[in-house]
Length: 311
Image (cartoon, rainbow, N blue to C red):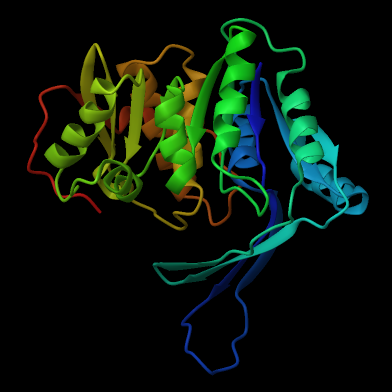
């Protein structure tokens, strides 16, 4: 069983238009609403990929019922809801041809009591060797020190923490020596203070963090694929995607695929890239599971072309 913790869930509204023009009235080609937030998306992808997972998140009573219905529909992950007194935010994604624009709200303000309850729900029933994935932005009232609290609680159960976030929280994850971080190339550059214009730059930045004590860095690079760096080596994986419809959530699917493999290594990296390839073919964050074609498209190498450009 994998557990995901989403401190700032969202109702994700995705709209598609043929051509977005500022100041004009548009007729939508598609309009969908899903229950989301990065951790919830990871749990959805895991369950659709055949891996048992549960999603922990805060919500008020009415929004919690609505979110549960959306997330658990069609066999989605079971929800563990920590009740708060504020509404869940709504995020909007606009798909305009090949361009994706996101409009994200800040979310509710969480207090210490809320954080204590979230932490208790997250570690409830955890056993040694299980993964917890904390993913997404922190809402108002939650600072980077919460990462250390979560890692300490998870580690005390013998479980492992994977973190997918940015800014001070990502810096805190490095200081806390969480088991795995999943930055994109831009987040990796920000946290290391080094440029990431090529694959070699990404590898160097990831290995810098391994040298500072991290166990594993899985860095996504858009169409250039992803790398996995550990003390045992560095691998690169990529997969040509012929039908890219929506890149939102591809990183969540990638992390889900990596964690689904259980052990961190080149096979986990390959599975993550296959799951990401399947995700970008979907117009929403419904995350169809990777199939044989997705897995066959993945090329993994340790003999890195260090001049490859990064998106």
